[in-house]
Length: 113
Length: 119
Image 1 (cartoon, rainbow over the protein chains, first blue to last red):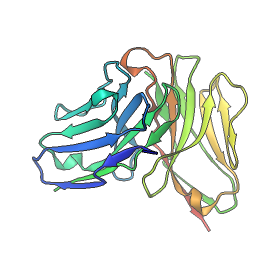
Image 2 (image 1 turned 30 degrees about the horizontal axis):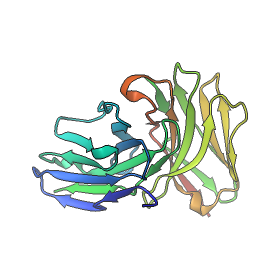
Image 3 (image 1 turned 30 degrees about the vertical axis):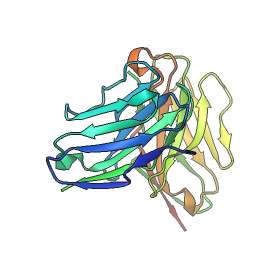
């Protein structure tokens, strides 16, 4: 596709359920990022994939959070046993080089009820 | 570790006036890149302007320009002739090709500044 695509756009889930958020980066982009943004707040770094290197997972807030990037393309962010504090917009971005500009998706708004 | 600080949580400007958003960063690297991103209410993050640290000349994109002070580690964004469509949250960001390990090339963002434009 022409841009970074995230699905779903919105997700409402019950507390305790698992959710999967998907990110389709721009074809050929080697770098992929996940960020979390709470209402009106800044970007909280979650995880960073760069080519075939081991990902930087230093931003994952707990072991309930995990992410994969299959075949160097699509990425899935999984949140297990969701909590109300997980409610936020989850943003994905990709970049063609380590220091090129990042292109963002429109995010997934997750609401845990 | 690299850090990016935006000390102005909110700013406001009158339409057609000029406003400057502040950003400072901390790094031990000599080669790096700085960015300003805009996030309107639609949530879509959009790159506004990009500066390469080895370039002395300040980047400019139409009404947007930066004041890059490398020694002071300061990177402010100036918006001239402000328009209603400029209202958004603005993020300053940093990346370096020299950071090692799993942080190689990672983008680090500031906390953002909400810009309001008054008609």
